[in-house]
Image (cartoon, rainbow, N blue to C red; front, top):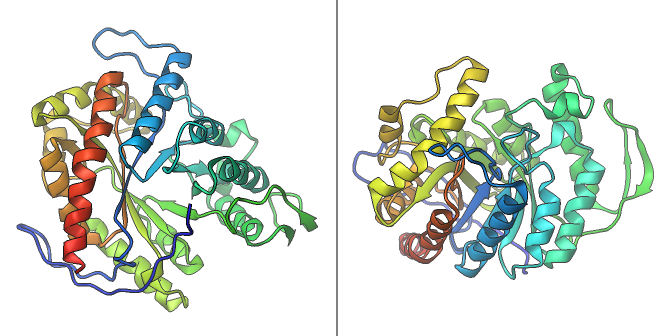
Length: 379
């Protein structure tokens, strides 16, 4: 696979009906817009029957979906890292390595690697190994994580939440720069001119920083000159546009060319041939997971009315038929001028055949139409 290079271009995007006026500076528009899928590899019971498939079958289904995503021309498949009973993706690099052997072109990423509670040396080694297996298709999406189970599991204190991430991200970047590293930190043993192997297939691993919309996280990614993956899983996407502007402005102030820094929007979604069918298929598992998380965190989850509203053009969720998904991606591209969209096609269990159909539609109908339109806009 060739190296990803983002050149310079500045654009004021035309408005769509009902859109707030927002101008953005986008990264290289000569690079095709990327569309991908991410998963937490859910293992929740079927909301209607109460029956859950085995972890073995769930993993087999997952590998089939990644293989199909590659075949239909999607750009990225990413796996989250979670240490909870309802998800079985606690070791994304291992699963992605299995997927690498079954795919040819799709990029394989974490979404996210919970770097605060991980050892950056092992993270680098795992993904460098994945990069060798996949011939240069590995990526790391580093984040602080939205759950806390990994902290006690690996012996870290939550009070160090932000400090851990800052320090470990610095080490991961140092490891990516060269094979011999000298480094000193507070939360890990120092490295004194030690070599770290293997090295990746390419010169370096692509490392993204995943953020949830806090200015501090946005500024960190920008100052370091790292690509940013912005999670929008609720609310009105337009209110996140200032974060993207802030990211590009801060990057420029730090001496980085914002036109070479891609932005990804990561959101929930599901696609079916019929819009109502998509909504009805996605809702049971989605409401089950959101209700569980809501009870844990002291909020009420989501109602069907709120869910249906979020499916509208200006809402956060990409749930509908292909035409609706295409329209929504282009609407958000007007807002953000981003270079990648990642959809979590399933939050909770979805019938495997329906998940496969969603990936097929995303790759064969949605992605070509979106790329063609964005190419037209960019001249």
